[in-house]
Length: 393
Ligand code: PLP
Ligand code: TYF
Image 1 (cartoon, rainbow, N blue to C red):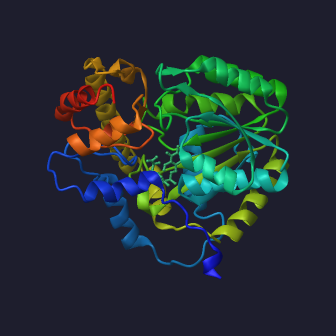
Image 2 (cartoon, rainbow, N blue to C red):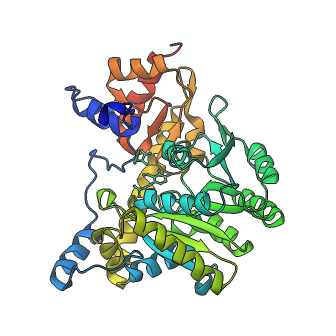
């Protein structure tokens, strides 16, 4: 039987981890997979998470099944954190999911199974897993240019034109903040314009919020999503806690279906629960229990927010430092200060990306995406010099 199968490519981003680990040079720089790093290159467990984990070990008295919706206290706390009352609670159906990826999978499967005619509108470039989930489920997809990598410019006109072309029941995928892989986010007026267009044509936003708090802060980063939800009868949100609580391998996230009324929300929730049950039965508990303890305890919540704010401030600092390098060979780094979050995509050829790796020990995705957090402040000049060195390749 297995001889009938075709080999599948490994995930290119995750494969970079192994390539980097095998490089013996001390000076190597890892700008590959999207994991936050501190100035020393580490990805430590948040102190707030450690405290919550200790509390969990002491107080958790059962590990019996919870059901496909997971930890309902976690779901309610994340709903508050993300939406902050932008819609009435009874219009929201929420489920805990294995990470933001599980949330995306549920949201997309809900649509494809029930409304196979719906087209998903996707701005490019985007996180490759968006495309692989969509195509894996046989979804109809249309793309438009979100960001012009050569010009290093967000293409708002293309996004708005795509939104206008979307039809009733189509799904308009948006990154809530910290766009992966470009860092190019919608400005408040873009959120308002897209919301207005979708409210006229009946298309439904699917907002992927995987870096909440890492752009400008918890309020600003969710403002676009909150506006849109307030303005439209229906929306889907895929939320990840894996970055903003630093619990990547615990697979912690939630999906929210915002429906026109309470009855429709209940039906949407029951459909999500059925799909969850068929996929993974129920989500892993640990990360969500930890996030719930943090979000519902005043002291832990302040501690967590301080830690998150420190990460966001470091990302902004590195962005300023890189932008101050100006032109590095063919690449103008000055745009990086205006972008948000962990990523930027630079206009580099495959030959330049290979030379950065081989000559300079600088590892990045084949798309030219860099993880800003992989740079210590003292690395910025060296990185700019390495870019200048591969000029013309
Ligand atoms: N959405 C985007 C844009 C991401 O970059 C990620 C990163 O992993 C996710 C969703 C999924 O996050 P998780 O690790 O929680 O599945
Ligand atoms: O874009 C990234 O690097 C992160 C991590 O299959 C990631 O989102 C990458 C690929 C993948 C899962 C997570």
